[in-house]
Image (tube, one colour):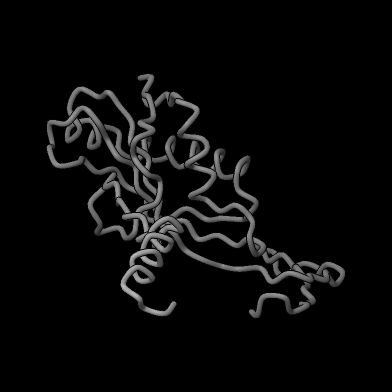
Length: 185
């Protein structure tokens, strides 16, 4: 798809009973972008990460998938699918924190908030999640964007600021020195 190009779309359903009717033509002035991103949500405390993530794993994953789905439904201007979700322990299997990671395939209009923005806004409200009867707190220090499923979890990537150009006072001082030396400026 090319941003800024007008597209005409028809939507239809398919079920076990067969194909359904198509919608009327929908005109879109803005291209819909389909992307995949990785997200992470760190929470705790748990007694021990390794044993916590193994006990009732499918039930816990279901609760976390549902929680993330609700967050994305309310905070992301997109349609989405969550897949490949799992729990990981940070560096220590005895850690009292667990990190939920997942891939999210989503489609949104150009410049619309995506899943990472929605998760980031939500985690900064200090939400609590109830999983298997335990109230767990989301750790806001863990960035929601995970570069890849193989990347270290909750790694904060610091991007150094760009080098600033010489200031006006430096340029004026250089000009004064050059004119004192008799150099034409």
